[in-house]
Structures are given as structure tokens and as C-alpha cells.
Image 1 (spheres, rainbow, N blue to C red):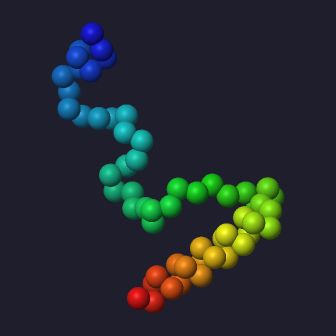
Image 2 (image 1 turned 90 degrees about the vertical axis):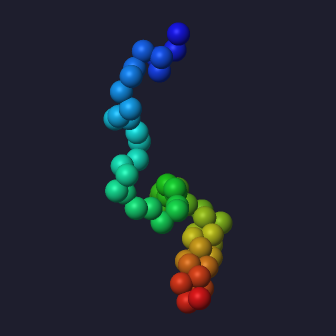
Image 3 (image 1 turned 30 degrees about the vertical axis):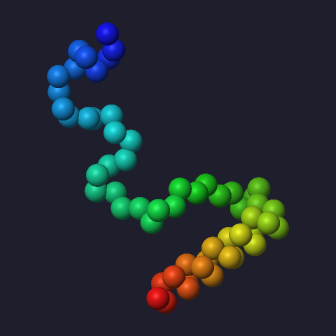
Length: 56
């Protein structure tokens, strides 16, 4: 028998993301100290793409 077979409660108190938390759809970790030229160029392109997307 698995763990779920013993638990009758429908309350999932172990969920990782709170329901009221809003996200911009990004899940990025970035360290300025470890960034190289390509990382910084990708960041600049991302900002430019975000600006274009917001204009439309």
C-alpha cells in the first residue's frame, strides 16, 4: 500500500506554491558574479523581447 491509500483528507498542506502567489511565468536563477558575456547578452535580448511584447 502506498502513502495515499492511508490518508483520507483532501487538504494538500504540502503543496509547494501558494494558491495566491502570482507568477510572470519565469523560473530563473541568475548570479551576476557567475554570468559570462553570453548570459548578459541573453538577458538584454530578454528585456528587449519583454518590451516588444508589452507594446502589443
